[in-house]
Figure 1 (cartoon, rainbow, N blue to C red):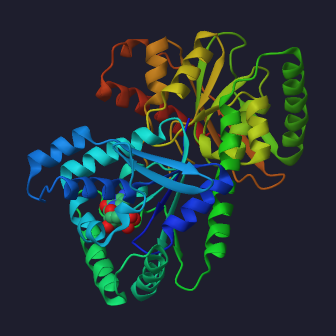
Figure 2 (figure 1 turned 30 degrees about the vertical axis):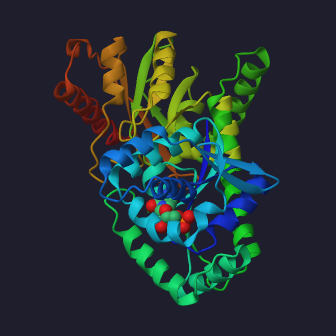
Length: 432
Ligand code: DC
């Protein structure tokens, strides 16, 4: 598994400096994607290849070998075996690089290389399109910004230190031109990712920016560790069963003290069933898990496990984490294992709380698994306000046999889901 921190933003916002410091402090591999576009530009200049000569550019892309290495916190760039760390920062390269990086073939080749560089590693990658195009699923997305005059001032100072001869006005014009060009690229245009954290560095010392990003990364790493924990299945030991039984007894008792629970119907004592309930409150799943003699293995969205206590409870009750908005094959496998072992699987077909009320379409997962495994569905209708000492109604329905749907296509699965939901809705109206 890799961990990707994306640092995007226009030139002169401090991306390079911040990335270098953070890579050192947090043991992340530093990937400066701008340096990669600069290498292609330098090679084009070396071979005297023009922007229109696509054949020759393609050949360069096939032959070029770019390496980024870090020594004592400083990044070195090697192009075809030669150290070009300084050469890629010259005026000639800087003036041309934005146009080179707009060439479709160049972008695709560099993007491919960048994705490969991050495979299975923990990286901090700086550029323009990392959080939007190269790694839209990056773990942390930061967008650094600053006003253009401040950025030009910084670059001017940097260049002077490196002995690069460019006036302030030249730099300002170049940055404005690159900003414009970078924002209007066909692929990987410079823009703020929807889920990026924007930091304006205009009046902020680098130290402060580093501190802020470090905190964001640390929080994410902590949350990730918790999530990883939930994916590691704990072996079925006697101790685990004991803890599970005790916790269930204790919390079940508390539940009955907190609410006046009214249960109708039941779950058969043996056999595999898929328990499908409406979802109005986090406490409804608890009612099904805690107030049953048998163990119900519930499916719950992954985000829930970011809370330490819930993460622990999820382990105790073997809750199956599921990633939202995607086909989570791992979760599906775990669900099928529960059913094949003759146990009870719990699912909220609405996928979210109050999905019925929001007129959302119920998900086909439960129907799909019931049809695939031949395991009947037990519909459950829950209602109540979940205010302390109020009545909570839990109505179990008769098992629904979906075997006549065998080989169902999407349309038929929709039909089966509707059938389940109709039963659930009926049961939510039952009071006793
Ligand atoms: O960060 P830099 O100034 O070294 O980047 C040089 C150029 O490369 C910049 O003008 C835009 C381009 N670039 C890009 O298009 N996409 C990236 N991910 C990184 C840089």
